[in-house]
Length: 456
Image 1: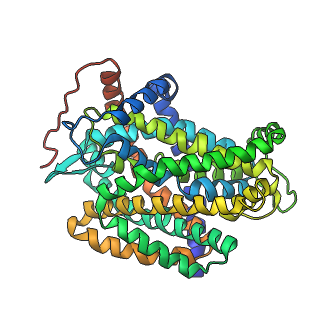
Image 2 (image 1 turned 30 degrees about the vertical axis):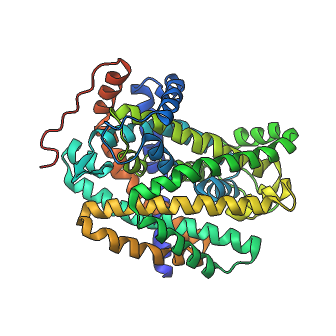
């Protein structure tokens, strides 16, 4: 076991070194240039489009669920413990400067996610009335490289067990144990039962749960964090000063904080940013591809809003709560650090609020990632694998709940990187299609979907 963990640490150092940082930031920067800063120029239009589609859905459009349900399902996978434990871990290891790189990752990730979602809808398939989409399909149908689609699906099915399963269970078990003394084993048991109840119903039941829970949990968390920030409003300028000051230089040890090199700040800021918003991983297009929509770009603009909500809004709320209360120097990490910040801001109630947030965030993330993982497995082995994959999913919740925090996060980081590489390669090679579809949509030209031999 020690050998495997050492090997994972070595591999992690390579994957999340300059290579992966260049890939993640580079693809977002590239799309920002070729799409002329669409995350800035079309963001207001994206918001109007979202508001219109919340109120109106054309049943004539092909798909399984409404665009709003697709958005909330995708947000359920991204708005998870990455917003609570991920941000805290980034600060605890990389220092406050890591948040700056999370923001960079989020701004560039908005357009990356737009491209992913657009391609996911454009190249999706309809099999027996059921929609199937995601990177494996735009790699197969767009690039005509089935071997790369298989590679993505293998890594996706495995990564789901890390980012969407063990990490969520681990963070939930950690915060429930520290707040209420609940044994980690019991967290694993309870989570497995409630995850199984929903995932057996497939994407439609998952979407129904997420469209109700996600807006409420996001609003609940934002309000709680804003109260703490307002209470400590005098510390906000200093917090931003720390974030910008240490984004470009190493930070010495202070209090319980062990200090951080510039590479640690970059690595943990971008790695936790990717973990939180998932832009570049290729996961959220799997959910967005099931939406009832008439044009790929119309769903793509929802991808802009998704990453903005996750990283620029929610992650910033967590970061400011941690830094303004001063607990980031405590030496504590993970969800427990965020709980400490909320307790410092709202004595007697803060820890409870974080515990509720972790429970809701982790639960919705787990049920959606189970769907992502099974769709990757389904691409590899057909529909016969769906039920066995759901059964396999549940024991990994126990492993996550009982595992060590660092080990679980390190394995998840490795799997995330392996999943992202085939997807980012595909995004770069299909960028011309994204540009063409975007020009088509925003110039109000008629969209004609052409699929030659797509299901052959």
